[in-house]
Length: 424
Ligand code: GDP
Ligand code: IMO
Ligand code: MG
Image (cartoon, rainbow, N blue to C red; front, side, top):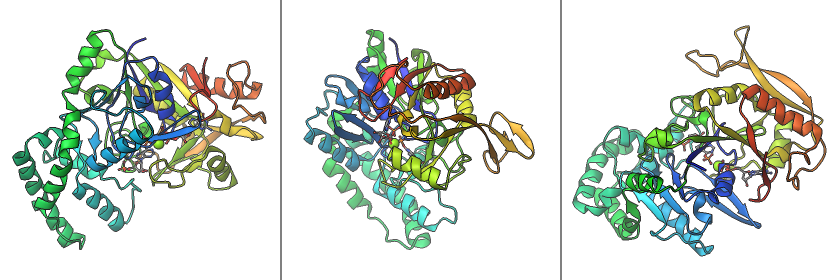
């Protein structure tokens, strides 16, 4: 075993939480390195469902260290609600095993307001989760953000909030028609919960590197999916952080050479929440079949997910950007009962057939999927535990994906429960 990064390969909701939980048994520490409570990672153990938003999915395994890295954006109130909920389910979420980097940026009430107001005003909505993620990352880049470590110095914190609100209150009152926020109220609200947050703060970069030096195994848990990456995804319909594997090192303060395994989580079909291009989307009964069979409703916002066939052009791009050492293929069971299964192997763009997304200024706009078709299978897969027990047509489907991508599919998931996964 060694250190590994787990990322979503498509537009999120591939089943990262489930695979992170499964592999946590083999590591000592799980680190979230980007995103925030826009994520919803579902883990089901013995019929009990847990949805993790910013707490690493490793938290379900007693004794494993869980870390929230500098690359994450943390909503203090939502974090406390999340740990309260986990604690009420009997989990240990004490500061002894859960740490937050001093450098993690805090999502402030004004970030959530801006997120909501912008989406309300926009002609072309991104369809964000409304959690204030984008505005918080903006402030980080603008160097006016509030970091978790600021909670230990009230005067610095107050000055930062006053400074931020000078600009934002103009936006609220003059552009959005909203009341101004009182800096003192924002400060007092945050100070009221600071005593609960401060015990979690730590120099996590050193913690992780020390663990590595002591021979411990570390897993880096990504959120969202590669096509939602701020640089390499379907901009502007993306999230505001880098999702690709290599951000694991930057988002947690370790050098890239420390991580040698990269597992991409691929759903056996495609889903997307929010707006933006989705070439293989099925707007008819087929999309409805996938949504119903796959239970495709957002784990964070409850929105119905858009559904369509697997897109190997998108996945080839993910392989090019991340070079995964292995793929975990999830939700294969959802495809049972289909006569035929389509998969997009190329795009047609301006009369040309392309294996990769067209490297044009407009990315995936105006592409048409080129499909290959394979016969489906009827068998219920939910109790399959070996490669041999899968129907022949299912094995051929999986092998075709593997051949096209040139990456070993090392894990196959056939149901939401922790034990409905096997290695190949
Ligand atoms: P994440 O954001 O990548 O962690 O994924 P989500 O939790 O948002 O969405 C994945 C959904 O699929 C959850 O409801 C999981 O319980 C469920 N799930 C995960 N793997 C499988 C699988 O192999 N089969 C089925 N039927 N459901 C799965
Ligand atoms: P997990 O980790 C699916 C999408 C939103 C929206 C866009 C921008 O559970 O896979 P944001 O609130 O981040 O500014 O929204 O990104 N999005 C996700 N879609 N799964 C997620 O997380 C997502 N996190 C953000 O729907 O289209
Ligand atoms: Mg999710």
